[in-house]
Length: 304
Image (cartoon, rainbow, N blue to C red; front, side, top):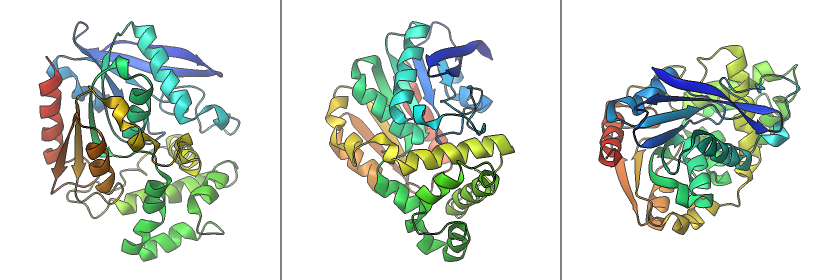
């Protein structure tokens, strides 16, 4: 059940959707969704309600219930960057009167969590993350080109829409034109589905099972962020992990994750002494019972 919700004016013509759930007097905890551009879902609330947290969810700029929506052809993407999202999180914290909060997320959500926590470490009590990413161009290059060695026929189809092997920049350009964006969004999401398709218990159409507007927002925002290296210096978030000193963290990563290979999680854990790394041998990028149980135990540990 939702306790409260609203649209927060964060500037630049953007209003970010937020909601709270769980125990109103519990420890504040923020769900930072992946994508970027995916938005939250009702099941995201389940992370917090069983453990007595004051759960807080929000849809990042341009997606979900936030407005304007990136499916709109005239939406200004120049004001949708990692650092805009970091400041949106801080404005939301202030708006809700939260002193410190636990940060919970996965995949792209990890990159955004790390960027926020390194800028505002005094506002973070703990961090729980899965499928670790850090926004490096090398990570994006692996996902949208390197992983082709496992799926050469499918990658040839993905590549066929563009004129060079720089598929990230090429797709980002296609997503800015109303006449090409629908087809580009479908192929972008289809490739994401392909990369996770061989995982144990893989859910078919994990990325492409969206309505057209949500599909366009996801592909447009994701390709935009990847094309700009998430507005981070290469390796910045791992190189500055010492700023997280004193913040307990749990990093959960599947060893079968082709989307986000394990090395990023390992490198971050080495650079962040207060983080515990849990490697899951039978899990990939998608959620499994193994991962859910591990994340649940981490949340229980920090719920007091």
